Length: 300
Image 1 (cartoon, rainbow, N blue to C red):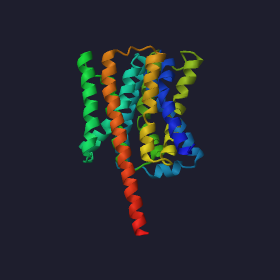
Image 2: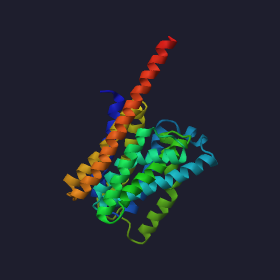
Image 3: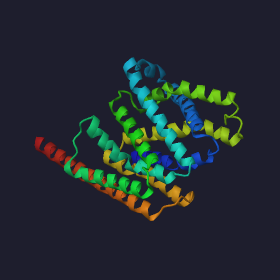
Image 4: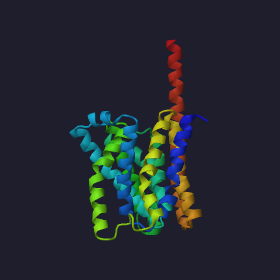
């Protein structure tokens, strides 16, 4: 197997089993889990930079403009983590999976709005199907699937910020977690002072799992960064559905969350949108590759 595919698939698989990890920490408030995730991620990332002898290079790339961009992306990422962890531990894993199913389509829409990217005519079809799916779920449940939409839009906006940011994945993640490190640390110290902090007061298993949130966060990102450089974007586009699929399956079959007929209809519209979206992108990519090969042959 291509190493790039193996790395990227491993990253998405790890993200797909995140609900199991955070379910074990269900007794810990979501905000505390996210704060620990920030703190231990910074420590883990600093260790990675140190081992790679890359810390001075990381520091030299920071200026006020870059710091502002990554402060915004750090807040967006933290909000995404908070909604996700809260959703998982509130027994709404299926809805969190929906957020990551529709995220690619939200990202496309944000590109149109903020980057003035133009959609090919047929690309509007999956966007419309996804919107119909969300509308159907809203009408049947009497409220917006806000967890799914919050996850899709916070991660979509985060991706938008990272698209225009000048730092790579490792340096970028380090900076954006460092920006929110101090608020996270202050929050946890206040919780400990008030006697409601989980760290060191909920047994050794919880303590170890909280410390490991740093490695659990960073390792899939490093695997993804390594894999994405080695495989075509179209392949990454297909592999990205591993994570929400595993989350969806764990929600329904492992945690026994209800999956009603109304949900089936709404999800089916969104799954159809993703099939159309992926197929259209694959066909366009092959057409582009074919045209490139013809041009190269003609030049040769």
